[in-house]
Amino acid sequence: MNKKTLLALVCLSAWMMGGDALAQSWPSRTVKLVVPFAAGGNTDAIARIAAERLTVALGQTFIVENKVGAGGAIAAEYVARAAPDGYTFFVGATPNILVVPLVSKVNYDGQKDFVPVAIMATNPFVVGINPAIGAKTLREFVDYAKARPGKLNYGSGGTGSIGHLSGALLLSRAGISMTHIPYKGGAPAVVDLLGGQIQMYFGNASELIPHMRSGKVSVLAVSSEKRSREVPDVPAVSETYPGFHTYTWNALFAPVGTPRAIVERVAQEVVRMTKDAATIERFHKIGSDPSGIALEEFADLIRREKSVWTEAVKAAGIQQE
Image (cartoon, rainbow, N blue to C red; front, side, top):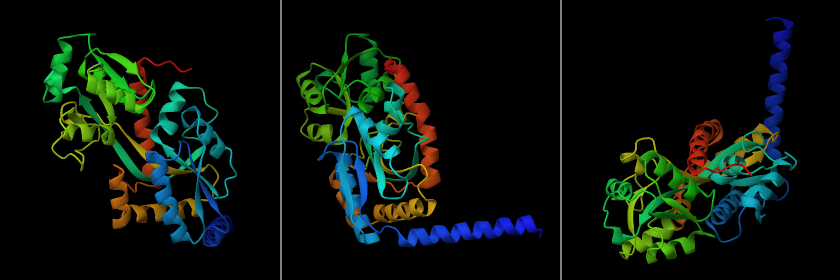
C-alpha cells in the first residue's frame, strides 16, 4: 500500500468516526419539522405523529412549525436556505418537490436543494363519478365520455393540484376530452359532484369513500399502483391503463449539506416508526399508508416520478407562471 492510499484511508476513517460522533451528540437542542400547509390537514397530522416519535426516540424535542403560502414554496425555500446542521427539516409532499417547481417560478430546486431522508406515509387518490351516469367500471365511464366529447366536466381542488394533474393524465391516457373545473379546495368540488354539476372528481380517498358507502358517489378506481387497503374491491387505474400511478407522499427532507450521519439516523428512526403497530394504526385512521422508503431508494423514486408529473402538467396544458 503506497503512502497516498494509506493517507486516503486514514482520512476516510477519521471522517467516518467524526460523523458517528456527530450523530451521537446530535440533537442537543430542539429540532424543527417545517410543514408547508396549515394545521389540521394530512401533512400536518403526519408531521405531528413523526415529531412525537422522534422526540421519544432521540431524547430531544421535535416541534412542528407551519409555514403556509405559495403552494408550499415559502416553507420549502425557508428550509432550503436554513443552516444544514440537523436542526431544521422539511416535511415535504409530492406537490412541493415535484409539481410546484414545474408550474411556478420558485426560489428553490426540489431535487438539488434537499436531501431525501424518508417517506413517512402515502395517500392514493380515487376516481369518483356521479352515480346518475350509471357507469360501474372505469372502462364504462371512458366509453360514456368518448360518446360525449367535451360535454362533461371534471373538478379538482385547484389548477395544478395533484387531483387536477391526475385527472388530466387519466384523460390523456384514456383519450377522452372533458372540461376542467377548478375549485378552492376539495370540499366544494365534492359538493358539486354530488349535485351533478361535475361528472368526475379525482380526490382524496377520505373525501369520497364515505359518499361511496352511502351510495352518493360511484368510486371506479384508485390511483395507487396496487389496490387500496381501505377499498380492496375497487380496482387500480393501472388495471385498465397499465403504468398509471399517481399518489402523494409526505416525507422528511434535510437541507443539502446536512451531515450524512444525521440524515441516516433520522431515516433509521422514520423507518422504525413506519413499522410500529401503534403508528400504523394512527396513519390508517387519517387515511394514510405507512411507507419507510428512505435515502437512495427515495431519491431514485423522486427521479422516476418527475417524468410522470412532467407528463401530467403537459396533459393539463399548464404553462409555468
